[in-house]
Amino acid sequence: MDFFHRAKVVRFRSHHDKYLTADDDEESVVQDRNGATKSAKWLVEIVPEYDNIVRLKSCYNKYLTASNQPFLLGVTGRKVLQTHPSRLDSSVEWEPIRDGAQVKLKTRYGNFLRANGGLPPWRNSVTHDIPHRTSTQDWVLWDVDVLEIHVDYVPPPPPPTHSDSLNFESSTPSAVDAKSTQFSRQESSDSYVGSPPKMEGRTIYYHVAEDDGEVDDENVQGYSLIFKGNGVEELTKKFEEETGLEGVIVCSRSPLNGKLYPLRLQLPPNNVMMQVVLVLQSSKVAKDFEAQGLL
Image: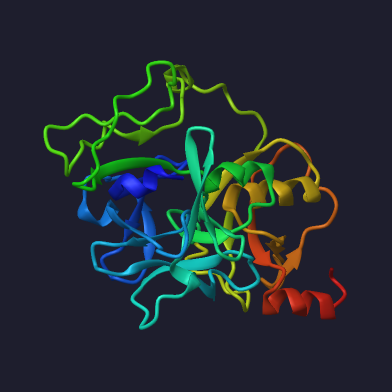
């Protein structure tokens, strides 16, 4: 996208209305609602050998980097970090791809910069991945605000017939207001008006287990969702959509010995409240289930 050639400093807003932010640990990359901080600003560098590849540098003078480190064990997403490699390689190179009024940032290996939602540890995290579920397709889309342009670039007047064109208005050639140049998705404010309909179904409280099946603060109520249905398979899909985790096993604790066991087939009748524990299929405890013939 040639508008990145004009841009000097940009910021990215995710599908969750949060900004791509360089964490103050100078290593992590997160999402944050405050787009006014210097941490949400990224300096654009064009890779000389390519017309459509950019590098993005944080306020800590480090590059947005698609690492090979898995974000969670057994999950496909990999960490996005701030790094300052001794040699600039393809891990710090991104290809902006326009998608309607927004952009996707693709790594040189085909993954996309993804703003995750759901519950911790996914909430506010940023990974690079290929979204496989329809519910997460929009997580790789970003609105781009151009905050500064190159001083030697004089922008033309915006074409009057295109609603998604770039509009530069500034008293100086080196800076534009964040509101003057945007790729922003169209959203109806009507979707935020009025109270949500009353939910029917059962309330299910849940925690996510560690690799060995241990659960921190299990005595605390934990997270919850409303589930309409009785099937374990349907509930599993609901949890995967809610948490962003892939390949979970819905478990309960035995009232006799306190051990975890996978739920089978149907949930208890009459929409009674439940407390469950989510176990990743790649975890040690899941392998124990398999060895015991519980899966």
